[in-house]
Structures are given as C-alpha cells and as structure tokens.
Image (tube, rainbow, N blue to C red):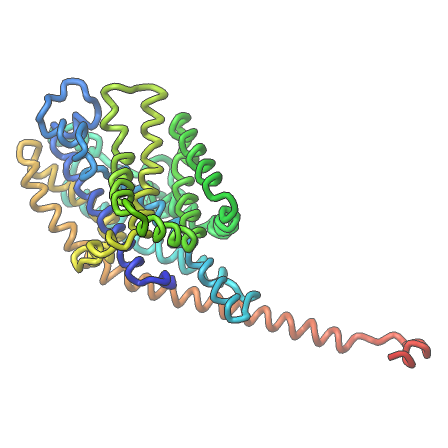
Length: 423
C-alpha cells in the first residue's frame, strides 16, 4: 500500500494500531484475574477500590478496553484501505493517466493472501497450545477462563476458523479471529466502499451522522453487521475527506485556544470509548445499549486526532511504539492462546505470574510471527497480485488484437460514388 503524503502521519497511525493491539493483550491478561473478570460481567458486589472497580468503573478502563480498541482497528482499516485507491486515482489523474486508476485485479489476491496465511498459521499455533496445555476439566477459577474450557480442535472447526468467513458463530480456538471476519468482508467490498467514500465528499457531516445512526441501530437490535461495518465506513469517510480535514485542523490549531480544543478532542475519544462502563451502574436496557454505541464515535475520534494533529504524532513515532505497530497484526493473532495457557497453568491465585510470563512471551512470538510468517506472506501476496495483474493485462491485449484482426478481415461494403467523392 502506498504511503500517505506525510510519512510521519502513517508512522503514527501504525503506532496507534500497535497501541490498540497492546491494549487488547492487556485486556485479555486482566481477564485472568477473577475479580476483574467478575466485575466485567456485572457491577453487582464490586467493592470500591478493588481491582475490578478500578478496571471497569473508572477512566482507567481505557487501559484495558480491548473490545473498544478493536473498533479502532476497524476505523484504521477503513482509512488506510480506502486511502490507497483514492491516492492512486489522484496520482493517475495528475499524470494524465485517469483511465488507469487502481489495480483491482492485483488488489484482491494480494489482500486475501495477506490476511489468510497468518490467520491459518495462528489457528494451527492456537491448536498446538491447547494440546500442550489442556483446558478441559481443569477448574482454574474465574468466570472468563472457565469460558475458554474445552475448545473444539476437530478438523472441521479448525478449517472453519481458518477460513474466517466460513465458520459459524464466534471462534473458540482463537477467539480474536471474530474481528477478522469483518476485516475480510470490508476488504471484499472495498470497491463499493471507495465509491461510497467519494460520495461523502459532499455533505460529510451528514454521512457521518448516517453511519453513526446505523451503528447505534446495530447495538440496540444486536445485528452485528450494523454494529461493526459503519466503523469501516467512518474510516473511509475520514480518508476521502482527509485533505480538507487537514486544512480545517491547521486552522483550528492556529486560532487562539486551538491547542486546548485539540487536547479536549484527544480526551473525548477515550472518554466515549469507555463511557458505557462509567455509566453502567446507572443505565441499563435501551440506554445502556446506546452508551455501547458511543464507542464507535470514540474510535473515530481517536484515529482522527492522531491523523490530523501533529503534536500527537510525535510521541507516537517513538521507536518502541513503531515496532509495536509493525508486529501488531501478529501480536493480535498469537497472544490469546498464550494468555489462556499460562492463566490456566498458574491459576487464579497467581494470575499475575501468568501475566509476567504471557506478556513478554506474546511479544516475542509476535516478532517471530512477523519475521517468519507475516513478511513471507506479504511477499507471496505481492507476487500473486503482480502475476494476476500481468495475466489479466495479457488476456486483455490478446482479446484486443483478436478484435482488431477480425475487424480488418471483415469484408467491406462497396461505397457509393458520391460518398467516395466526398471522402
């Protein structure tokens, strides 16, 4: 994928993806603590000042907001994937190649292989961890770890999870793969999303309101496509209007009090992400569902502030965060079975020992997965994309030559004398 006009901005967005993957890891580690897992399920009986209270009912929830930061992934994917064909089209137009546009023939095999190979490997690794550290029949304590008991490692289930969109229900061998289902669907629908993104350049605020309304409807009704796909759409909207938003952002920053406005926007995104948890003791039913829907605009604000405000991009360009962003996809794929394995081994009374082992081990495995699986899969994906594009181009040229040959070989009708004279 081509870089954005500012390489620093892309580095910051990559780092944000790494931060999101790290928070998902911390969330799953925290769930091995029985008190935190119980507070996650219900606020009833949660003592003020306890670990469960701090991690679910205070703004510190932001540090363990795993499901919320998956939505940040979705917004980032919408932004980056749509930005690429839009940038390609703009460059082609500027060079007088408007008809060329984006190479969709290369895109599909490249994208599918890019996602599929690491996913297949992650399912195999997760199954290996389950065989190495059996979960069935072990009473480890804690409601969250109990739900990970006895996953189905039969071949049909493994193939279903590895296919991402071919499985039924939430995956149980490597549960984080649930989000890859929506990533894949968005990837397959990308041409439609690009057209939709271009349409948002007129009345973008109205389009944003429509996406948010659809998402809120999804949370109220429990319809997952309505919950999650608008987050990709909002990222696409951000990509399509990026240049105009940059101008607006610079104007806001230059005015008096502009820095204070950006600081408030920076704080508002995380606040919206975790607002459901802060309001959960007071709200339930419809109103509780609507507070869940606030995590979508929160995720969009988190991405938008990083994409548009340079002072926030600088700290995100620190070398450790850049590395974390580089391995973020691999970390997301490999960490869950590691966390569950060591949570099971050490038990609820020593969950913190499991955390001390599983966090660095997950990071190390993510680096190895990146080097040995993700990078090779990218090379295979790029080669396959080029091959598909060149093959399609050769077929088009062959078809064009056949058409020209047929036209030249066709018998010509006699031309009337008066037409020959006028010619």
